[in-house]
Amino acid sequence: MKAYLHAAFGVSLLAALSSSPASAETLTIATVNNGDMIRMQGLTEDFKAKNPGIDLDWVTLEENVLRQKVTTDIATKGGQFDVLTIGTYEVPIWANKGWLVELNGLGADYDPDDLLPAIRAGLSVDGKLYAAPFYGESSMVMYRKDLFDKAGIKMPDAPTWEFIADAARKLTDKGSETYGICLRGKAGWGENMAFLTATANSFGARWFDENWNPQFDQPEWKNTLDFYVKLMKDAGPPGASSNGFNENLALFNSGKCAMWIDATVAASFVTNPKESKVADQVGFALAPDNGLGKRGNWLWAWSLAVPAGSQKSDAAQKFISWATSKGYLELVASKEGWANVPPGTRTSLYKNPEYLKAAPFAQMTLDSINSADPTHPTVKPVPYVGVQFVAIPEFQGLGTTVGQYFSAALAGDASVDDALANAQNYVTREMTKAGYIK
Image 1 (cartoon, rainbow, N blue to C red):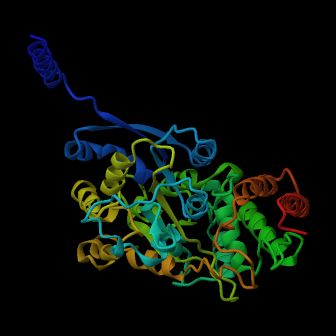
Image 2: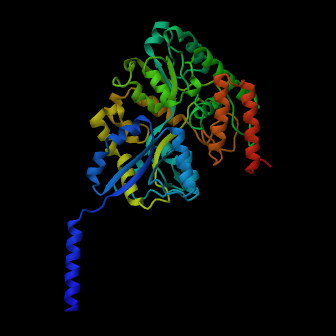
Image 3: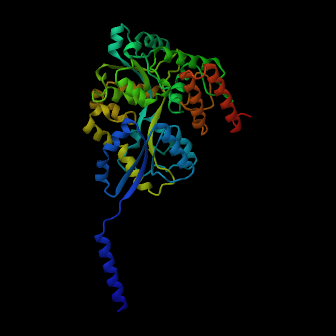
């Protein structure tokens, strides 16, 4: 009788379980509010259809806020997120700390060997992939061909900073709200300091000498910041100290900028007639140089990673595989056209005739990515790697504070000399405290 009751109970329990719906696993994804990520969110029904047991909860944040929240969460093992949007700076540092899961569950058809070597190397430690690139980028000049033609100016494929400054001043017409150049001014290690650090490389400047002594008291930094502040005062839009990537994209697309030097990923947005008033008038050139052997372009990939604190690594890797696969590129192409697929991640994309035909910026993007050299970013020798950042854990704080000093100089709230002196004193103090300077 006892055995019968146990069996009957087992049957009724199985019946109850089979009649109730299986609860879905929810992934919490932290991402940046850039256009490509917003587009990805709009396409996730495709992922859900292929993975019916996984739901997605999005936390979409402005770049500086995202970095702060994600860094705090992973450093404190908060476990708030299952998928992180992080960059080339964070991946090797966090992987070495044991904060990221190795991406070894992306599936048999993922083809990691198709990832662009420069991008893959930046997301790997000891040959193991710890983040998958959603899009890769360098930086380049985007410019209005119609305004250049009207002024009788011809943009070279590889301009100098002298040419850019001269053209920017000639093309500025503040009365009609047309500004010769739009550049990042918003404070942040990944905002104005990404641009200014890459630019400084082309002026012969560096963050540190071989012994980790800060170099903001050297003439190369003075030349860089002087040049930038004067150029933006003469030819930039008002309120430039508040403008980051998204703000400058909006200005350029509304027809207010003759030139914009920024991420190559912007190319698909500035040439999209649905988003840009000047879509049919945009030309591209390499980031400028000063003839010293270094161009002012960077190397970056916004990438997806799984924090070690997540309890849902398998599901998270399924999502990452979907979002960074060749299939995702084809999905975007089918909905938005080949010109709008996330660029800069896969070799096969730059061999795809449909993409090359649809994206006039493809070759310039690839050339810019390939010309950036994180292992030799500066004219003079340095003890660090990284083009628009210094690949040490302290740089996030250093870059953000220095960015605030430099943004204040752009806003006219401090002199260039004071901004550089503040940067020198602050960075020296912090690097001494951290043990880099003996």
